[in-house]
Length: 465
Image 1 (tube, rainbow, N blue to C red):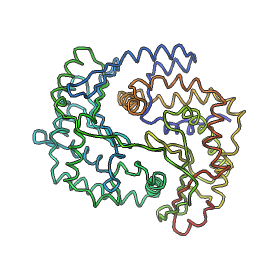
Image 2 (image 1 turned 90 degrees about the horizontal axis):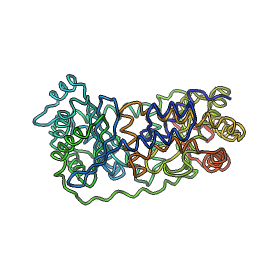
Image 3 (image 1 turned 90 degrees about the vertical axis):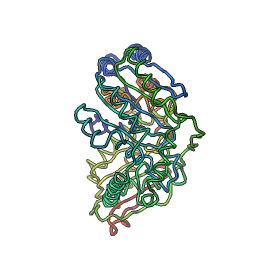
Image 4 (image 1 turned 30 degrees about the vertical axis):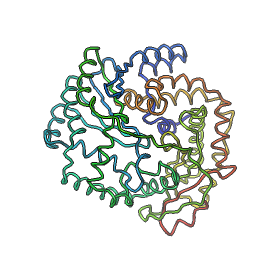
Protein backbone atom coordinates (compact mmCIF):
# COMPACT_ATOMS: atom_id res chain seq x y z
CA UNK A 1 0.00 0.00 0.00
CA UNK A 2 1.53 3.33 -1.05
CA UNK A 3 1.01 6.63 0.71
CA UNK A 4 -1.55 8.66 -1.21
CA UNK A 5 -1.11 12.42 -1.52
CA UNK A 6 -4.48 13.20 0.08
CA UNK A 7 -3.51 11.28 3.22
CA UNK A 8 -0.15 12.98 3.61
CA UNK A 9 -1.45 16.49 3.00
CA UNK A 10 -4.05 16.23 5.77
CA UNK A 11 -1.28 15.82 8.36
CA UNK A 12 -0.87 19.57 8.42
CA UNK A 13 -3.66 19.33 11.07
CA UNK A 14 -1.06 18.17 13.57
CA UNK A 15 1.42 21.00 13.23
CA UNK A 16 -0.61 23.88 11.86
CA UNK A 17 1.06 27.11 12.87
CA UNK A 18 3.53 25.12 14.93
CA UNK A 19 6.56 24.08 12.94
CA UNK A 20 8.83 25.43 10.27
CA UNK A 21 12.21 24.76 8.72
CA UNK A 22 14.07 26.24 5.79
CA UNK A 23 13.80 24.72 2.32
CA UNK A 24 17.51 24.06 2.61
CA UNK A 25 16.97 21.84 5.65
CA UNK A 26 14.08 19.97 4.05
CA UNK A 27 15.89 19.13 0.84
CA UNK A 28 19.07 17.96 2.53
CA UNK A 29 17.24 16.01 5.18
CA UNK A 30 15.10 14.19 2.65
CA UNK A 31 17.92 13.47 0.22
CA UNK A 32 20.64 12.22 2.54
CA UNK A 33 18.81 11.37 5.75
CA UNK A 34 21.75 12.69 7.75
CA UNK A 35 21.09 13.66 11.34
CA UNK A 36 24.38 15.61 11.31
CA UNK A 37 23.10 17.77 8.44
CA UNK A 38 19.90 18.49 10.37
CA UNK A 39 21.88 19.31 13.50
CA UNK A 40 24.15 21.67 11.55
CA UNK A 41 21.24 23.53 9.97
CA UNK A 42 19.50 23.67 13.34
CA UNK A 43 22.57 25.19 15.00
CA UNK A 44 22.92 27.78 12.23
CA UNK A 45 19.27 28.79 12.49
CA UNK A 46 19.38 29.05 16.28
CA UNK A 47 22.11 31.64 15.79
CA UNK A 48 19.69 33.57 13.55
CA UNK A 49 17.61 34.57 16.58
CA UNK A 50 18.22 37.80 18.45
CA UNK A 51 16.37 38.46 21.70
CA UNK A 52 15.91 42.03 22.92
CA UNK A 53 13.68 43.64 25.53
CA UNK A 54 11.81 46.93 25.91
CA UNK A 55 12.21 49.02 29.04
CA UNK A 56 8.91 47.71 30.45
CA UNK A 57 9.97 44.08 30.06
CA UNK A 58 8.22 43.23 26.76
CA UNK A 59 10.42 40.63 25.02
CA UNK A 60 11.27 41.17 21.34
CA UNK A 61 12.48 38.26 19.20
CA UNK A 62 14.06 38.89 15.79
CA UNK A 63 14.33 35.93 13.42
CA UNK A 64 16.58 36.31 10.41
CA UNK A 65 15.09 35.34 7.07
CA UNK A 66 18.12 35.90 4.89
CA UNK A 67 17.60 37.14 1.37
CA UNK A 68 13.96 38.03 1.98
CA UNK A 69 12.54 41.48 1.28
CA UNK A 70 9.45 40.77 3.40
CA UNK A 71 8.99 41.65 7.06
CA UNK A 72 6.40 40.01 9.29
CA UNK A 73 5.68 41.75 12.59
CA UNK A 74 3.48 40.27 15.32
CA UNK A 75 2.36 41.30 18.75
CA UNK A 76 1.43 38.21 20.76
CA UNK A 77 -1.15 38.65 23.53
CA UNK A 78 -1.13 35.94 26.20
CA UNK A 79 -4.42 34.45 27.30
CA UNK A 80 -6.51 33.89 24.19
CA UNK A 81 -10.13 32.83 24.26
CA UNK A 82 -9.60 30.69 27.37
CA UNK A 83 -9.24 33.94 29.36
CA UNK A 84 -12.66 35.16 28.15
CA UNK A 85 -16.08 34.11 29.37
CA UNK A 86 -17.99 31.95 26.89
CA UNK A 87 -20.93 34.37 27.05
CA UNK A 88 -18.93 36.88 24.98
CA UNK A 89 -17.03 34.39 22.83
CA UNK A 90 -15.48 35.97 19.74
CA UNK A 91 -15.08 39.42 21.26
CA UNK A 92 -11.25 39.31 21.21
CA UNK A 93 -11.16 38.65 17.47
CA UNK A 94 -13.74 41.37 16.93
CA UNK A 95 -11.74 43.83 19.06
CA UNK A 96 -8.53 43.36 17.11
CA UNK A 97 -10.37 43.57 13.80
CA UNK A 98 -12.06 46.84 14.76
CA UNK A 99 -8.86 48.31 16.22
CA UNK A 100 -7.13 47.97 12.85
CA UNK A 101 -9.90 49.84 11.02
CA UNK A 102 -8.47 53.29 11.61
CA UNK A 103 -7.70 56.19 13.92
CA UNK A 104 -8.25 59.94 13.92
CA UNK A 105 -4.94 60.27 12.06
CA UNK A 106 -5.41 57.36 9.64
CA UNK A 107 -8.93 56.73 8.43
CA UNK A 108 -9.95 53.30 7.15
CA UNK A 109 -10.06 54.76 3.64
CA UNK A 110 -6.55 56.18 4.01
CA UNK A 111 -5.19 52.89 5.34
CA UNK A 112 -6.83 50.96 2.50
CA UNK A 113 -5.26 53.29 -0.05
CA UNK A 114 -1.82 53.00 1.56
CA UNK A 115 -2.13 49.22 1.69
CA UNK A 116 -2.80 49.19 -2.04
CA UNK A 117 0.07 51.57 -2.86
CA UNK A 118 2.67 49.91 -0.63
CA UNK A 119 1.44 46.32 -0.73
CA UNK A 120 1.21 45.79 3.00
CA UNK A 121 -1.50 44.14 5.05
CA UNK A 122 -2.63 44.06 8.65
CA UNK A 123 -3.20 40.66 10.26
CA UNK A 124 -4.94 39.56 13.45
CA UNK A 125 -6.28 36.38 14.98
CA UNK A 126 -7.50 34.97 18.27
CA UNK A 127 -6.83 31.42 19.41
CA UNK A 128 -7.33 29.21 22.42
CA UNK A 129 -4.21 30.37 24.29
CA UNK A 130 -3.09 33.61 22.65
CA UNK A 131 -4.06 36.26 20.13
CA UNK A 132 -1.90 38.05 17.58
CA UNK A 133 -1.98 41.31 15.68
CA UNK A 134 0.59 42.62 13.24
CA UNK A 135 1.47 43.32 9.64
CA UNK A 136 3.28 42.02 6.56
CA UNK A 137 5.18 44.51 4.41
CA UNK A 138 8.16 45.11 2.15
CA UNK A 139 11.22 45.81 4.29
CA UNK A 140 11.78 49.32 2.93
CA UNK A 141 8.34 50.35 4.24
CA UNK A 142 8.52 48.75 7.68
CA UNK A 143 9.11 51.98 9.64
CA UNK A 144 6.10 53.70 8.06
CA UNK A 145 3.86 50.63 8.36
CA UNK A 146 4.83 50.18 12.02
CA UNK A 147 3.84 53.79 12.66
CA UNK A 148 0.38 53.26 11.10
CA UNK A 149 -0.16 49.90 12.79
CA UNK A 150 0.87 51.14 16.23
CA UNK A 151 -1.44 54.15 15.97
CA UNK A 152 -4.31 51.79 15.13
CA UNK A 153 -3.57 49.36 17.92
CA UNK A 154 -2.90 51.97 20.59
CA UNK A 155 -5.38 54.65 19.54
CA UNK A 156 -8.22 52.96 17.66
CA UNK A 157 -11.17 55.04 16.58
CA UNK A 158 -13.72 52.34 17.42
CA UNK A 159 -16.35 54.17 15.38
CA UNK A 160 -19.96 53.19 16.04
CA UNK A 161 -20.54 52.85 12.31
CA UNK A 162 -17.62 50.42 11.95
CA UNK A 163 -18.93 48.39 14.88
CA UNK A 164 -22.45 48.23 13.42
CA UNK A 165 -21.12 47.20 10.02
CA UNK A 166 -18.93 44.48 11.51
CA UNK A 167 -21.76 43.10 13.65
CA UNK A 168 -24.00 42.98 10.58
CA UNK A 169 -21.30 40.96 8.79
CA UNK A 170 -21.04 38.65 11.79
CA UNK A 171 -24.80 38.14 11.89
CA UNK A 172 -24.73 37.05 8.24
CA UNK A 173 -21.79 34.74 8.97
CA UNK A 174 -23.63 33.14 11.90
CA UNK A 175 -26.67 32.50 9.75
CA UNK A 176 -24.49 31.00 7.02
CA UNK A 177 -22.64 28.76 9.46
CA UNK A 178 -25.89 27.50 11.00
CA UNK A 179 -27.24 26.67 7.54
CA UNK A 180 -24.06 24.90 6.44
CA UNK A 181 -23.86 21.33 7.78
CA UNK A 182 -20.07 21.49 8.18
CA UNK A 183 -20.47 24.70 10.19
CA UNK A 184 -23.16 23.07 12.30
CA UNK A 185 -20.83 20.13 12.93
CA UNK A 186 -18.02 22.47 13.96
CA UNK A 187 -20.23 24.27 16.49
CA UNK A 188 -21.62 21.03 17.92
CA UNK A 189 -18.16 19.44 18.10
CA UNK A 190 -16.73 22.43 20.00
CA UNK A 191 -19.52 22.31 22.56
CA UNK A 192 -19.26 18.55 23.02
CA UNK A 193 -15.46 18.25 23.12
CA UNK A 194 -14.84 21.22 25.42
CA UNK A 195 -17.79 21.04 27.78
CA UNK A 196 -16.81 22.48 31.20
CA UNK A 197 -13.37 23.44 29.84
CA UNK A 198 -11.83 26.90 29.19
CA UNK A 199 -11.59 26.02 25.49
CA UNK A 200 -15.37 26.14 25.22
CA UNK A 201 -15.09 29.88 24.51
CA UNK A 202 -14.94 30.27 20.73
CA UNK A 203 -12.69 32.60 18.75
CA UNK A 204 -15.67 33.66 16.64
CA UNK A 205 -18.94 35.28 17.68
CA UNK A 206 -21.73 32.73 18.01
CA UNK A 207 -25.50 32.92 18.09
CA UNK A 208 -25.31 32.73 21.89
CA UNK A 209 -22.66 35.45 22.36
CA UNK A 210 -23.84 37.90 19.69
CA UNK A 211 -26.47 39.65 21.80
CA UNK A 212 -24.12 39.93 24.81
CA UNK A 213 -21.46 41.93 22.98
CA UNK A 214 -21.43 45.72 22.73
CA UNK A 215 -18.92 48.43 21.87
CA UNK A 216 -18.29 49.27 25.54
CA UNK A 217 -17.20 45.68 26.18
CA UNK A 218 -15.01 45.78 23.06
CA UNK A 219 -13.21 48.84 24.40
CA UNK A 220 -12.71 47.09 27.73
CA UNK A 221 -11.18 44.03 26.06
CA UNK A 222 -8.89 46.36 24.10
CA UNK A 223 -7.60 48.01 27.27
CA UNK A 224 -7.02 44.57 28.77
CA UNK A 225 -4.84 43.60 25.83
CA UNK A 226 -2.61 46.67 26.22
CA UNK A 227 -0.78 45.15 29.15
CA UNK A 228 3.00 44.80 28.96
CA UNK A 229 2.73 41.66 31.07
CA UNK A 230 0.69 39.96 28.32
CA UNK A 231 2.69 41.03 25.26
CA UNK A 232 5.55 39.48 23.30
CA UNK A 233 6.84 40.74 19.96
CA UNK A 234 8.14 38.65 17.06
CA UNK A 235 9.77 40.13 13.94
CA UNK A 236 10.85 38.06 10.94
CA UNK A 237 13.00 39.70 8.25
CA UNK A 238 16.46 40.25 6.82
CA UNK A 239 17.97 42.51 9.48
CA UNK A 240 21.34 44.10 10.05
CA UNK A 241 22.25 45.14 13.59
CA UNK A 242 21.62 48.77 12.63
CA UNK A 243 18.14 47.97 11.34
CA UNK A 244 17.33 46.07 14.52
CA UNK A 245 18.57 48.97 16.64
CA UNK A 246 16.42 51.43 14.70
CA UNK A 247 13.39 49.17 14.91
CA UNK A 248 13.90 48.73 18.66
CA UNK A 249 13.94 52.52 19.06
CA UNK A 250 10.58 52.71 17.29
CA UNK A 251 9.14 49.86 19.38
CA UNK A 252 10.33 51.52 22.57
CA UNK A 253 8.62 54.74 21.57
CA UNK A 254 5.36 52.96 20.74
CA UNK A 255 5.16 50.19 23.34
CA UNK A 256 7.81 50.89 25.98
CA UNK A 257 5.43 53.00 28.03
CA UNK A 258 2.71 50.34 28.35
CA UNK A 259 2.25 49.46 32.01
CA UNK A 260 2.46 46.00 33.54
CA UNK A 261 -0.95 45.20 34.99
CA UNK A 262 -1.98 42.25 37.09
CA UNK A 263 -2.84 39.27 34.88
CA UNK A 264 -2.89 35.53 35.49
CA UNK A 265 -2.93 33.05 32.65
CA UNK A 266 -5.90 30.69 32.87
CA UNK A 267 -5.08 27.17 33.98
CA UNK A 268 -5.68 24.71 31.16
CA UNK A 269 -6.57 21.25 32.51
CA UNK A 270 -6.23 18.02 30.60
CA UNK A 271 -9.25 17.50 28.35
CA UNK A 272 -11.24 14.53 29.59
CA UNK A 273 -12.83 12.43 26.87
CA UNK A 274 -14.96 9.38 27.38
CA UNK A 275 -17.62 7.56 25.43
CA UNK A 276 -20.73 9.66 25.94
CA UNK A 277 -24.17 9.76 24.39
CA UNK A 278 -24.07 10.36 20.65
CA UNK A 279 -25.08 13.92 19.79
CA UNK A 280 -27.42 14.20 16.81
CA UNK A 281 -28.08 17.60 15.23
CA UNK A 282 -30.57 18.24 12.46
CA UNK A 283 -29.56 20.33 9.45
CA UNK A 284 -31.78 20.23 6.40
CA UNK A 285 -29.01 21.51 4.12
CA UNK A 286 -27.20 18.22 4.62
CA UNK A 287 -29.65 16.61 2.25
CA UNK A 288 -29.29 12.86 2.50
CA UNK A 289 -25.65 12.84 3.59
CA UNK A 290 -24.12 12.83 7.05
CA UNK A 291 -21.38 14.94 8.61
CA UNK A 292 -19.76 13.00 11.44
CA UNK A 293 -17.11 13.74 14.06
CA UNK A 294 -15.70 11.37 16.64
CA UNK A 295 -13.47 12.87 19.32
CA UNK A 296 -11.11 10.98 21.58
CA UNK A 297 -8.18 11.37 23.95
CA UNK A 298 -4.82 12.17 22.38
CA UNK A 299 -1.40 13.29 23.68
CA UNK A 300 -0.50 16.88 24.48
CA UNK A 301 1.81 18.83 22.17
CA UNK A 302 4.82 18.38 24.44
CA UNK A 303 4.22 14.68 25.12
CA UNK A 304 6.74 12.09 23.95
CA UNK A 305 3.76 10.29 22.42
CA UNK A 306 2.80 13.20 20.18
CA UNK A 307 4.91 12.51 17.09
CA UNK A 308 4.40 8.72 17.20
CA UNK A 309 0.66 9.38 17.53
CA UNK A 310 0.69 11.68 14.49
CA UNK A 311 2.54 9.08 12.43
CA UNK A 312 0.10 6.39 13.55
CA UNK A 313 -2.81 8.47 12.29
CA UNK A 314 -1.15 8.76 8.89
CA UNK A 315 -1.50 5.03 8.52
CA UNK A 316 -5.02 5.08 9.96
CA UNK A 317 -5.99 7.74 7.41
CA UNK A 318 -4.78 5.42 4.67
CA UNK A 319 -6.99 2.68 6.07
CA UNK A 320 -9.96 5.05 6.19
CA UNK A 321 -9.36 6.12 2.61
CA UNK A 322 -8.89 2.63 1.17
CA UNK A 323 -11.59 0.83 3.17
CA UNK A 324 -14.30 3.34 4.08
CA UNK A 325 -14.15 5.64 1.07
CA UNK A 326 -12.80 3.56 -1.83
CA UNK A 327 -13.92 0.00 -1.06
CA UNK A 328 -17.21 0.69 0.74
CA UNK A 329 -17.98 3.97 -1.05
CA UNK A 330 -19.52 5.13 2.23
CA UNK A 331 -18.19 8.66 2.46
CA UNK A 332 -16.75 11.48 0.37
CA UNK A 333 -13.86 12.23 2.72
CA UNK A 334 -12.62 10.85 6.04
CA UNK A 335 -9.48 11.65 8.02
CA UNK A 336 -8.10 12.43 11.45
CA UNK A 337 -6.93 15.67 13.04
CA UNK A 338 -6.59 17.46 16.35
CA UNK A 339 -8.32 20.46 17.88
CA UNK A 340 -7.39 22.55 20.89
CA UNK A 341 -4.30 24.45 21.95
CA UNK A 342 -1.92 23.58 24.77
CA UNK A 343 -4.14 20.57 25.36
CA UNK A 344 -5.57 18.66 22.41
CA UNK A 345 -8.39 16.35 21.43
CA UNK A 346 -8.10 13.85 18.60
CA UNK A 347 -10.84 13.97 15.96
CA UNK A 348 -12.12 11.69 13.20
CA UNK A 349 -13.99 13.69 10.56
CA UNK A 350 -16.25 12.12 7.95
CA UNK A 351 -17.94 14.41 5.43
CA UNK A 352 -20.88 13.51 3.20
CA UNK A 353 -21.47 10.02 4.50
CA UNK A 354 -24.01 8.08 2.45
CA UNK A 355 -23.83 4.86 4.48
CA UNK A 356 -25.72 5.23 7.74
CA UNK A 357 -26.34 1.86 9.39
CA UNK A 358 -22.84 0.49 8.82
CA UNK A 359 -20.85 3.73 9.09
CA UNK A 360 -19.55 3.25 12.62
CA UNK A 361 -18.67 -0.39 11.96
CA UNK A 362 -16.72 0.57 8.83
CA UNK A 363 -14.72 3.16 10.79
CA UNK A 364 -13.98 0.80 13.68
CA UNK A 365 -13.06 -2.08 11.35
CA UNK A 366 -10.58 0.18 9.54
CA UNK A 367 -8.99 1.18 12.85
CA UNK A 368 -8.73 -2.47 13.90
CA UNK A 369 -6.96 -3.47 10.67
CA UNK A 370 -3.79 -1.59 11.69
CA UNK A 371 -0.89 -3.84 10.65
CA UNK A 372 2.43 -3.50 12.50
CA UNK A 373 4.34 -5.13 9.64
CA UNK A 374 3.02 -2.61 7.15
CA UNK A 375 3.94 0.23 9.49
CA UNK A 376 7.50 -1.07 9.91
CA UNK A 377 7.92 -1.41 6.15
CA UNK A 378 6.82 2.14 5.37
CA UNK A 379 7.90 3.99 8.53
CA UNK A 380 10.71 5.95 6.88
CA UNK A 381 8.40 6.99 4.07
CA UNK A 382 5.82 8.15 6.61
CA UNK A 383 8.43 10.16 8.49
CA UNK A 384 9.85 11.84 5.41
CA UNK A 385 6.41 12.69 4.05
CA UNK A 386 5.35 13.95 7.45
CA UNK A 387 8.34 16.27 7.75
CA UNK A 388 7.95 17.59 4.22
CA UNK A 389 4.23 18.31 4.53
CA UNK A 390 4.71 20.10 7.84
CA UNK A 391 7.71 22.17 6.88
CA UNK A 392 6.28 23.37 3.57
CA UNK A 393 4.64 26.16 5.57
CA UNK A 394 8.07 27.59 6.37
CA UNK A 395 8.72 28.61 2.78
CA UNK A 396 7.27 32.03 3.57
CA UNK A 397 8.04 34.68 6.16
CA UNK A 398 4.50 34.26 7.50
CA UNK A 399 5.05 30.54 7.97
CA UNK A 400 8.29 31.18 9.85
CA UNK A 401 6.60 33.72 12.11
CA UNK A 402 3.82 31.22 12.89
CA UNK A 403 6.42 28.63 13.82
CA UNK A 404 8.32 31.02 16.06
CA UNK A 405 5.18 32.24 17.85
CA UNK A 406 3.73 28.79 18.47
CA UNK A 407 7.11 27.46 19.51
CA UNK A 408 7.41 30.26 22.08
CA UNK A 409 3.91 29.75 23.41
CA UNK A 410 3.84 25.96 23.59
CA UNK A 411 7.47 24.96 24.07
CA UNK A 412 8.99 27.93 25.87
CA UNK A 413 11.61 28.70 23.26
CA UNK A 414 11.41 30.57 19.96
CA UNK A 415 13.77 28.05 18.33
CA UNK A 416 12.23 24.83 19.68
CA UNK A 417 10.59 24.05 16.34
CA UNK A 418 13.98 23.62 14.69
CA UNK A 419 14.55 20.33 16.50
CA UNK A 420 11.34 18.77 15.18
CA UNK A 421 12.88 17.12 12.13
CA UNK A 422 15.44 15.36 14.29
CA UNK A 423 12.70 14.27 16.69
CA UNK A 424 10.61 12.82 13.87
CA UNK A 425 13.61 11.00 12.43
CA UNK A 426 14.31 9.41 15.83
CA UNK A 427 10.87 7.79 16.10
CA UNK A 428 10.93 3.99 16.06
CA UNK A 429 8.30 1.49 14.94
CA UNK A 430 7.53 0.30 18.47
CA UNK A 431 6.77 3.88 19.61
CA UNK A 432 4.21 4.31 16.84
CA UNK A 433 2.60 0.96 17.62
CA UNK A 434 2.39 1.85 21.32
CA UNK A 435 0.83 5.23 20.50
CA UNK A 436 -1.74 3.46 18.32
CA UNK A 437 -2.55 1.01 21.11
CA UNK A 438 -2.84 3.76 23.70
CA UNK A 439 -4.89 6.36 21.82
CA UNK A 440 -6.44 4.92 18.65
CA UNK A 441 -7.10 1.22 19.18
CA UNK A 442 -9.39 1.91 22.21
CA UNK A 443 -11.82 3.68 19.87
CA UNK A 444 -12.62 0.30 18.32
CA UNK A 445 -11.94 -2.01 21.26
CA UNK A 446 -13.40 -0.02 24.14
CA UNK A 447 -15.73 2.43 22.39
CA UNK A 448 -13.48 5.19 23.75
CA UNK A 449 -14.77 8.01 21.56
CA UNK A 450 -17.78 10.30 21.56
CA UNK A 451 -19.65 11.07 18.37
CA UNK A 452 -21.48 14.00 16.80
CA UNK A 453 -23.73 13.48 13.77
CA UNK A 454 -25.28 16.15 11.55
CA UNK A 455 -27.87 15.18 8.94
CA UNK A 456 -31.46 15.81 7.95
CA UNK A 457 -33.95 15.30 10.78
CA UNK A 458 -35.46 12.20 9.19
CA UNK A 459 -32.04 10.53 8.81
CA UNK A 460 -30.51 11.00 12.26
CA UNK A 461 -31.99 7.88 13.83
CA UNK A 462 -30.61 5.66 11.06
CA UNK A 463 -27.00 5.99 12.24
CA UNK A 464 -25.94 3.10 14.44
CA UNK A 465 -23.68 5.09 16.78
